[in-house]
Amino acid sequence: MKRIAEGIYLLESCGFVNAYLLEGTQDMTLVDAGPAKTADALLDELKDNGFSFKDVQRAVITHAHADHCGALTALMAKHRFKVYAHPKDIPALTGKAPRAPGGLKSFCMGFFHEPLQPWEPIDVALPVEPGQPVRGLPQWQILHLPGHTEGSLGLYHPTRQVLLCGDALSNRGGRLHLPAQSYLKDAAAARSTLESLAKMDCDVLACGHGPLIRGGAFRFIGKLLQS
Image 1 (cartoon, rainbow, N blue to C red):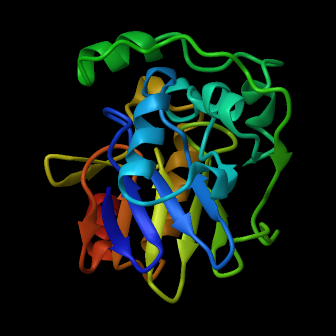
Image 2: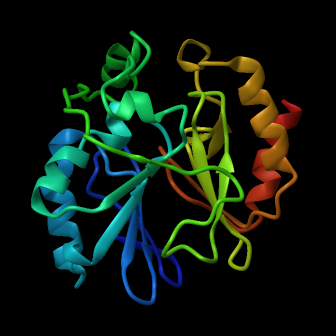
C-alpha cells in the first residue's frame, strides 16, 4: 500500500491494475476492486496495513471491465457493501450487457503478460453521475470520462488536487497514453475527455494502470493533448 495523500492510498495487490482506498471519518471507499484472482490479496493488504475490510462501505467502479471489477463478487461474499458506477456501465456490471471488447483478454495477456480471469456479475449497482454526491465522499467530485467505455468515471479531490482517472489515461514508461484504438468505445469521446482533463488543476494523477504521476501532473496531460 502506498500513501498518495492524507486518506488516499494506492492498493498494490491487484496485479497490473491499480485500485485505491479512500479513508473517511467513519468508513472507507474502494475505487475499483481489481481482477477476480486478486480478491484475497486485496483483503490481506488491507489487514497488513491496519485496516478492517468491514469498514469498507462502498466501491466506486471507474468502468465495467474485468480487470477493474472482477473481484467484486468475491469481496462482497465476505462483506456486503454498496457499488456505484455510471448508469451506462451498470448493465455490464450486472450481467445484462456485454462486458468488454472482444480483444481485451488477448490485450491483457500481450501487454501485461497476465491472463484475464473470468468473473461473475454482481446483483445490483447504484448509479452515480457528475454533480451527484456519493455518501462518504463529500470532498470528492465525480467525473464522467467517456471513451474507454461509455460510462467511464473518475474522481477528483480539488483541495488535494488528486485525480483518479481509471483507464481514461495510463502511465507507461513515464508517459501518458490514451487507451489503444482497439479498446476505445468512442475515440472522439476519449479525445474530448483528454481535453477536459487538461483544463483541471491536477497535481497528482493516479491512473488505472502504471505508476503515480506526482508534481504538476497537469503538464503531462497537456503534453499528451499536444502530441
